[in-house]
Length: 172
Image (cartoon, rainbow, N blue to C red):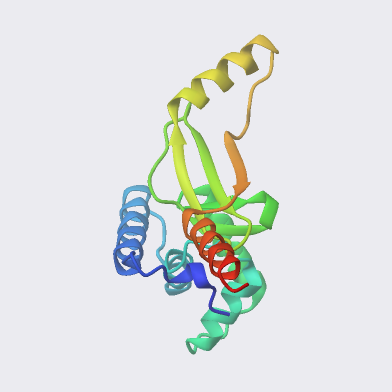
């Protein structure tokens, strides 16, 4: 299924795919890990969109491209990508997203998730990370994962809603 946010008009997904694959190649080379064709294909599928994909959506995309793959194999690749910091699991969507860049241990990754189109932007916040670390220490808590998901509306969806409202107001 193609989603409107899969291909925003002002964005070059080719650069996203090339960057994600280059990060993956570097990670595998540095750690002596195997870069299998399936790992490459799953990473490419994730990097082609900024909408989190579920494992079965990835299976469908691979099958449409002539690569029928069992779901369990895709799940194993997704586990690998998350473990190596090459992808993120978006808990609220039970879906995955290619990681845009490496993260510091204290850094909090914030996902801005559009509730309308699904577009998800990954941003890092050292200030939120610092405040979260302070609050966790004060509570005697040690975080395992520093990820926040923020739901709302992206600029494109807000603009489309504003245009739709303005257009219907003039129709009377």
